[in-house]
Length: 534
Ligand code: SF4
Image (tube, rainbow, N blue to C red; front, side):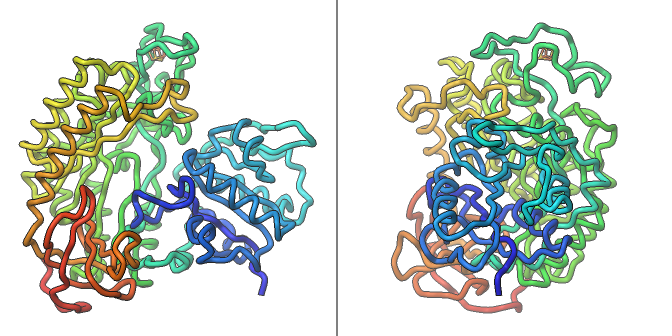
């Protein structure tokens, strides 16, 4: 049987193999599948990596849709070439990679690029007969395509309201297309967009600079949407506010329905996806102030209590977690509430730089003191917070690096489980799009990396001897004859001797660290359901 659409999940595939977040399944491809299924199209999802290594084929489909990030361009190029060798069908390209505009269109040559939110655009393409080769593309907003040899981009797509977003339901059944979905972190979208509409005050390479109009701090939330100097909103390194706008939530019922369906299909690990989970129903539309008003405790409790009472989670056989939170919203009260329903979670808190003035100059809300307070609150309530920093950011200097190293140590003592340090990468659509990427060889980058590694190595040894409940995922790529085991709750990634089927739940005793990101474990007991909830 020929299936209508093959959806390729190329997110994080890079040049062919995912090296980070191997246990993560993002929500974008399932959202695309949901729109297609609602219109009566059959579809299947494949990982880019599986297609490129020949583990999954691309024959037997009429059309191709690819979801990717900017860094995934090499994989996308190879997949499109392979597709065109055997198929006449169209190639749609969407996701964050589409912010690359004309350059991406010309370089990767999809039939059509979906720019910005895809649901409504895909819906209109289907209704206009795009897959039957009958659509007048000029009449559809939010797309880019080649008209003969000319790249054409139609008007930007208006962003969906919360109600409109809620009318689209991601496919639940297509989760089973992912190998090892039972062991993976499956992301369920709670809200889209970010409330940080402050902007960088650093001069951009093309001369744009803040003229101090006051909009970024205006009491009018609508005024914050506009910058007369043309500077994209948000932290300078991030493209979320310019691409997705202010936060829009899905309804509590839609989230609960999706999580229920996924758990019933055997998913063990659910992550509530949001650029900042604490923006959930914070009120005021558009919500463009990152730190005020405070988080909506009532709405968060209503959602989390329903999710925590789903049988698989209540019995401890599946785990719920939240990730991204802004430090300025993460108060002791918030920490207590989350800890009540989401046990031992690891909130991800962005610090980016330990210097308060550098933080303000890159457009970030809050302060380093907020991050220290948030980490203490998280640890006090039994959570294992991760703190994120970036080296090579515009504005970095000896002084900011010194302050970042001091803050890393302070945060480690305050209870940060891990310091995660990334090299700056310019993203299309962000204020810092035209700055050079971080150099791994830079003197400051090396100092920052060493400081973070020292802290993390020391923390990893704390796991030795501990018993962690995990889920078998896939054969290890680096240790022959071993199986990768992901923690059922929060914790480190482990590898154990022997072959285990994906989804096998087990107790693992940590033997020793194998690298900064991997621990060697031994299986204590194979079991399905009968442990006490830890
Ligand atoms: S809106 Fe633009 S010009 Fe106005 S304060 Fe913010 S960055 Fe400066």
